[in-house]
Amino acid sequence: MNQVSSRGFPVTAWSLVCGLGSDLGTAMEALKKGEPRFSSPPPETPFKTVCGTVPAEIAHLDGDLAVYDSRNNRFLKQALLPLQGAVEGARERWGASRVGICMGSSTASMDEIEKAYARYAIDGVTLDGFDVLMSGSAHGMVKVLRALTGFEGPVSIVSNACASGGKTFASAKRWIEADLVDAVLVGGADSLCQTTLRGFRSLALLSEGPTRPFSEKRNGIHIGEGAALALLERTGEGPRLLGTGEGSDAHHMTTPDPEGRGAQAVMQKALLDGGREASDVGHVNAHGTGTAFNDAMEAKAIRTVFGDSLDPLVVSTKGYVGHTLGAAGAVEAIFAIESLMGGWVPASAGADPLDPSIGIHVPTKTCDIALNAVLSNSFAFGGSNVCLLFGAPE
Image (cartoon, rainbow, N blue to C red; front, side, top):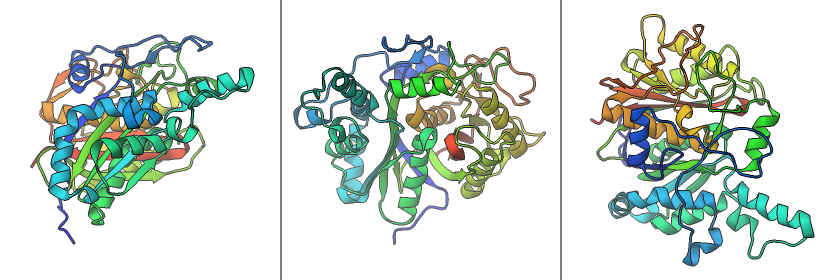
């Protein structure tokens, strides 16, 4: 068996596509400047809200991949473009069969299914060439990524609602520890669709305007879209995935445990798994949906984990890009990694004026700070939670 590092595994490359931009550099420039981006919802949306829509037109899949063409899969190809050198390097180092793919998604290409059904409902005719498995499911995600990367190791789709993208990091870490693989391409993707927009509105969780995490004026989420990819390897250079914590408190199908016990547990598990103390962590990328119950319970969990003497900077980046659902855990992990590597923490957009009852340090301006370790939280329906602990490069 290959030796497993006691200090986690390096994230050797990463990329994303989101409402702040169709490439990492553009997105991070906006994040550091504290400039969120909002857009109108799709025209068929019958109520008022805003969205975090990917701003650029992304090229369609063509050639042999045309059968898998969807907005969601286009995001994946776009996110993969700057990683081609890292992908080739991993394939050469480890061999194609020793590199896996683990992706998270909530609805995948549901918008393609919606379009096909809308046509069928009118005249009973199926859209030409539409195949639900090819164009409308998570099946297409791994098919596209396998074709574009040449990776031949195990593949998996994680669909644990809003924790999906974060849980791929935890799965990949276990795969490497179990010596199934030597590297894993992880991440997530979700595109805007009416199923999620109308679904969250039916739960009275959707805001008419931008989400305002940890603000006393918060009143719900707004939905975003995008994709994020990262390459986790057994050895190499880069920030390290030190520890992961997963749990399922099963408090309620859609409402978090108000005491935050599930959130607290996964943060403590991540610290224990990574061999770090809470005092090592200077920044928490919070799940921070901007709903009354979620923000209150997460703040309570953070206060419990860190105590009265520690004061990490707690930011929800959903105020910039919206809730990207199955991609959120991966998108926000990359935001956390960028903070760790760059020595800065973004303002928590929309948080001002802060809810005075929150009791955690939520910056409303970008802060320069040296960081040794960061946490990234993702909490999902049903209490399916995950926390990722990243550390500075060795």
